[in-house]
Image (cartoon, rainbow, N blue to C red; front, side):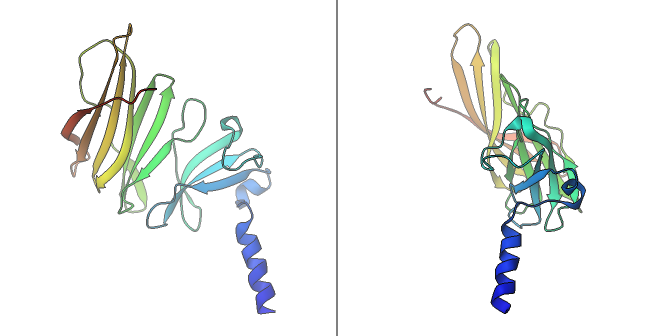
Length: 195
């Protein structure tokens, strides 16, 4: 009898998760990008169950939220890529910081940084988080690589210049102070990868 109950419980855990609020609407959800401490994750909600849960059609996504785990209580809505797909999350080792990489169009990718204060996450000002370069910029992609330590993020900036003038790739580290302001503490030019 105990074995039958354990198997039934396991089957329930393996089924796609549905929240009470979305179950009536027939929506499907998936938890991704779980924090290192397992207390937070990203809930992606779709109109219906996708054919392939590993490759969800961005057009079927109705919401992308940061939730607390295991309750799945909504903490905040998250920005999505211009095509509707979820942005990519990079968690710091202490789970108190995360960077969100979002494609805002085919020529721009930005990184947003959030810091935890209690049970909430605050978005920090990262509007000018880049390395200044000379040239006529056509495309610019600023993406996180990893957290070096909580509050210090390593990023890559790929800049493509107009009129076939080439490109530039720079790795830089940004450290956030207690007020939430970032400071570029190191930068180096790296070789661009051929396409």
